Length: 219
Image 1 (cartoon, rainbow, N blue to C red):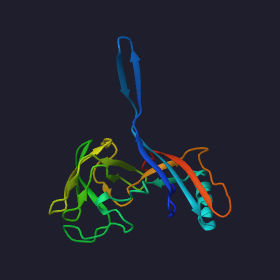
Image 2: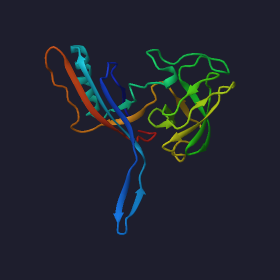
Image 3: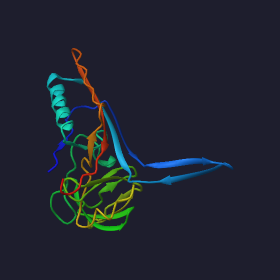
Image 4: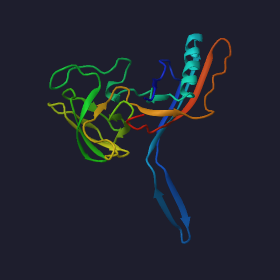
């Protein structure tokens, strides 16, 4: 069983969190360009935090050892941990349209195609904006992170249809799956040699980069 570690709860001064679409472009005679897409899109992130306390720096020292010893990071965009309509320090909350407490978790109801899904189990009127994140989860280790491409609002039954990119791998993410809007995450591996935590008094700073890692269900 793979060990998944959450990000330490500190103020990150700088974050980069973006998808990578593998491709190869060739410039040909006659001013022709040809682009070939290949492989599976993935996410890459960089994190930096400054003015750490001694205890926070020690937490990152321990995190580094775990990640370099085979553990994986549950990575997300710490500057946008929930839909923009609900940004703030408080986690998502409320009541689902069908009853029951809402904490950002929902259900994947339908996979229309790789770039369109229907989600249920939301509050009435739950708002999602273009550029918001959504995580589709098959299991604890198997997660797929996407950006929403068009604004959408859940209907009175708590159901919404979302346009997403990059596309969901329908060969891996078959129903049932859950959907997550609070700290939507993917599994990442620490990039070798990227970690730095110089200890300079009176404050410490840390920086590192990570790349999405595809775990299988049995890992």
